[in-house]
Length: 555
Image 1 (cartoon, one colour):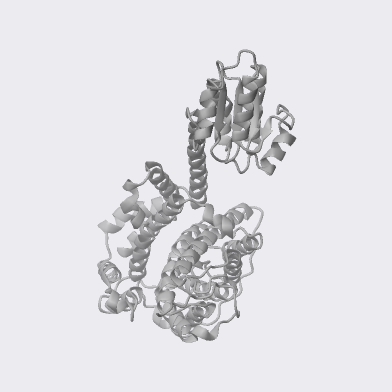
Image 2 (cartoon, one colour; image 1 turned 90 degrees about the vertical axis):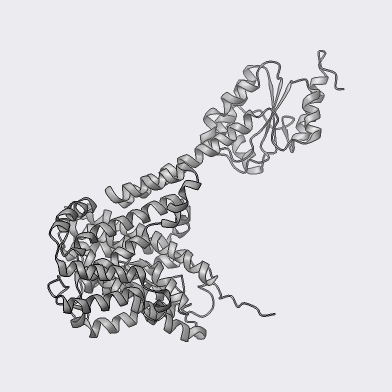
């Protein structure tokens, strides 16, 4: 029987694993070829120029692979990062010292995120929120390229001006650009998979579209692209621009972290490895900091390029570094050829990127899931497109958390309101029946959230009225409590004391019991009112009731 060899988790073993050198080199070469047209397109879309996109792919790709925590990941400019960077570039008037100061600061923030071990918290962002902002970014990318397909540039920055410029571009098209854009779109959307293994669709579109432009002249082209090494950019900002730079840096850092770690999860699933989230953030931060120092646009883990790298044999950090070195060789030698690439070609490639960024798989199945999740996804999408990314994610996370707490609280209240507690044994049912309704058992059924705490006392009070003399509160399935829950229990105790009822506490863990003892002033002291399990509590309650002169017979 043959055995499948599973790759060792990244971060273990030798720092440079040469056991898969051939696969890593071929994967890096393939990913570099695919990254070339995307880097040019992202650089042009950012406003900093196509050469800034290439250098962004080189710096981020090299250093994120060298210092990161996901062996097979390929990093570089991505749609989400370019959208934010383009807005920053426009807001700061294209001033290199200000724009790239934000990029450097974003990289430093990512390093801090990694050192403080924030990587694990990305997993707490709900999927509808991720789907909504990724789909919104896809819409923004498409909107920014529509006018360029017709040979025009959108007026101003932002999604609304980009949409507003489309009717004018359609009414007055540059026919050469339109034809080139149509050819590009046809190639990237219909390129056969059997050819993609040898020549990626974006690269084919880049070559064919540029050749068509030689036959149909007149379409706007990139123009002169500088070759050689990039120049050092000294970051500077004043008190007037500090707030804008800091805000943009924070957005870039958070977005780049989310984008990279989501790609790391994809790489884990494909390679059966486990990435180091915090180390990955440090690597991405180093890459972005170097990119900013040399006037390159920021980047993150790129899902499509990572998948292509893995499918081509890449498994270790060598593949990501090889991808960057391939681009370095290209940028040092082929700059003059790239100057003839039409804007419409890059626009067509980016439209395909935008469509792929939209979460079509979720949208097709959204009607089968909870309506709230779909509504949340649409809300985040709308905020992403028409407001900004941080607002969209922040609102989405807060609403998702509140919705989850509400559902948890409803379930906890429902458990308290049920006539027969959940998971009640036959012996417990018999004891409750023999008590004649004078014992009431409440099984909290799980962690006591602050969402349920507000109404908990009311529901216990309403059900424990009348002839109930003993209230048994079961904490067996309560692993922890917070201050809100302690206050709710304290309220129950005070109400019972005022009504002349006894309260028995059972099943408390040491941590829960210690917090209740320290914090709740209305709780009775230790002793006969606390029990290790609820059978013992119910039996004791029934015995004490039977000792009273007017007790209900126990049989």
